[in-house]
Image (cartoon, rainbow, N blue to C red):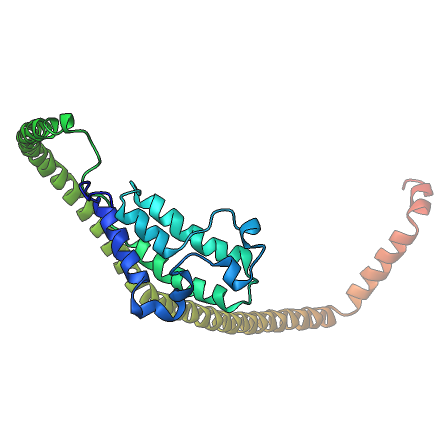
Length: 276
């Protein structure tokens, strides 16, 4: 065969490992239909090559890997998947070989998903020297950056001290406010019942005052009534005295009253009388 001068890439080495696993006895129970190309004549599959235009099997893939026909892992994976898709395409979905293909493809996909990245990109040798230069530059830049960072850190430390002082002041103010709120809240439930008690006491006082007021009013009324009675008694005494005087004066009052009545009744005839 072709001499194996060209080394496989790390990814293709990994793919070769997958291929060996697919061909191992571990998976033989469901991998055996894919070991060799489909013999359509022997199996009586006269329409196989009409439906499947690009047949593929593990032995063909192995030869291609050995002959270094795969330059990228994607080419290898493409042929493995072509082999399975041919199976799905030609056979009915409930066929045993389809179930076997799915089992084997699960093994492949699980391993292929864990394939590591290439350690170094495939670059020509002319690009081998710049990385060292870049590394030197990056190290010098990092040193200068570190020095600038140190200076900035010293500045930031000064700024940070002021900021810390400001933050501390703000925090202390916030703490004071919180303490005040806490004090207010803690006093709140204690003062409220006092207010209620005070209200109740005020109500009681008002009631008692009203009762006292009523009592005072009653007292005032009683004193007024007593005074009025006294005045009435005085008036009655006066009236009785006056009546006594009137009775002592006797007939003169009656005569005068009658004469006065007559004079009131007949003032006009008096005016008509001639002068004496």
